[in-house]
Length: 167
Image (cartoon, rainbow, N blue to C red; front, side, top):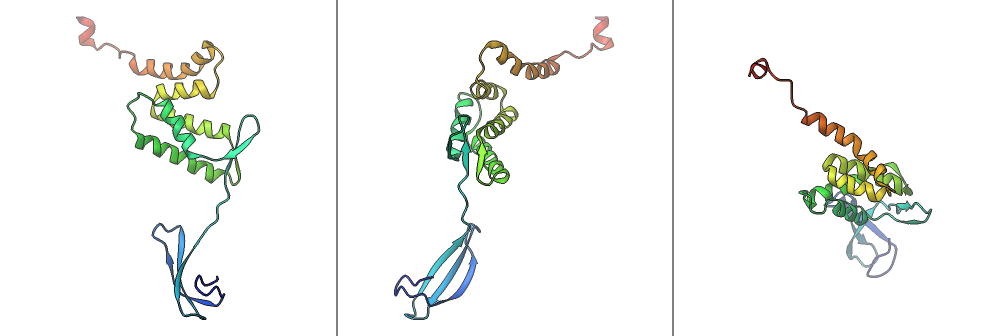
C-alpha cells in the first residue's frame, strides 16, 4: 500500500478492526518513510451479477427493476412500500445466494411471483399476466383457478347445526 503523502510503499499496520457495517476491515497505517498516518479499507470484491434475458441478451442485475415491477403490480393495493422493499431484498438475496455470475430472468420472475402470491392475490395476477404474457382469457383463468378454488373453500358455509335445521 503506497502512502498517499510521500507515495512510497513502506508502511506498517497500527490497528485493524471491522468497519461499522462489518463488510470491510478498517486499517490504520503509519508510513515508515514520512511518519504520517492514514486509514485504508479492505473489502470483498463482488463479481457483478448479470441477468440473462429471454432473448439471450445480458444486463447487470438491478434491484430497482424488481422493486419497480412490485410497485406496478401493487398499484392501488393496500401494501406499504416498506413491505415491497423487503420483498425486493429477499429476491435479490436469493439471486446472490444461488448464482455467482449470471441469473436467468425466469428465475427472478418466479421469485417475484412467489412473493406476490403470499402478499396479495390481485397483485400476483397483475404481475403474472404481464410476466407470463397471457395470450387469451383461458390462460388467465387457468392461473386464477387454484386461487379461486381455495377462496371458495374458505367461503363455503358450514354444516347447519341441529338448532338451525329445526328452525
